[in-house]
Length: 266
Length: 312
Image 1 (spheres, rainbow over the protein chains, first blue to last red):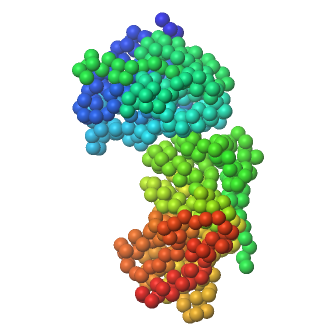
Image 2: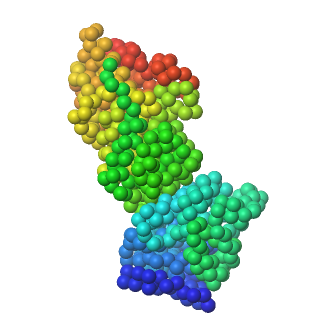
């Protein structure tokens, strides 16, 4: 049993969310999977595969690690979760709804005209969404800016940013990786949803990223590799990353695109 | 001849003043701080200055992240690199979420000179104006530059401000008061209106002086805020003078000429002529040679006025 985050103690009077146990998170992860399948099924589109691969990552963040307050979404000291792979929006929406940012019933409006839940993340449309994304490769740069602001303001929040592995084809990701390391941003933790696939096929066939781990190391990052569907491994990885000083950390989470989607009829 | 002052040096000094007044002002550059003059800010506020290296796309993203966290970022590079090099980053990370980022770019237009067409921004105003929610400003001199930069700092929302590389003649006096979104009548006149921006304002004034000697009474309007444009001033010019010539250091399409045309056609159709770069890139050369070869001198404005008057 990994040590639970003490986030509720850090800002006790503000934080309304509590850190769930691994067992509790397993239940939440199932609910998020079901939401993703239901939402994208109803919408008839919406990248369920890239959402399902990141379910455990997002569950660990929103239901254990993040210091946040759904009743005060703009709380200045909140930890930030930035979804750079904006096509996994259905998963983020499901997590935000389950946290109480907006009613779960709203999930069924995904991608419909007038909905708050846009096809890709839109910070002006959805409560709790930190960054407008969808054009890949931009989230890590944004996260660097948010982390620099935190340092300038002497705020203690952490910045978590989720990228896709295919997204790492984008040159801007490596510009930002260089900058995060240059600025020694130890308040920044990147997670790569390493599901091995991109739209046109396997990464290794479309555009080989290997040696992926060594690329991040060479850019000055502390690298941790985990099974991205194992909540205990993810928790341990995050806690390890939080303890790293003087450099940013990246968690390469090995995942399966569409993980457990078939259980829900996909 | 009026005194010539550097817009970008004025920009750098204004940033330092703003930095002293407001701790939330932060500045980013992409390895051109000695040219954009953000180096002044970097020296006084090293902890609030971020040199992003030769990586404009990343600079835009970092600026957006800083803005989303309550900072007021000024991000600078050459006009040819922003928005050109990083248009999608500006679109997705700044314009779409309407973040409070100020892009102040230098070396606009072909008066960049010897560096040649790769370094001469001729489409930037079209790109910047196309972005929903962006305010686009092209100051005419250093005095207007200082005030436009201050206006950007104190008005919420994304801004694009385009400055020139060369020292430019002062067309304003120290008592000038820049008003965001308002055009300025530089010379009254009743026969025709010359609407100009940037370095073309000085040329427009020169052209108006020459034309007056020939009995042509030109109104000269400076429209520093290209977007949102001062529609009332344009309509007034169309109604009262019945003919308009626009003058800009930019392609004919998508900049001042296009903006003014839309207002005129919709409200008060009158004959128009356009002093601008035709559908081409320029080349290396001395700034004055280039302005002459590509039709951006006072003489070109005078010719356009004579042409438009024949159609009035």
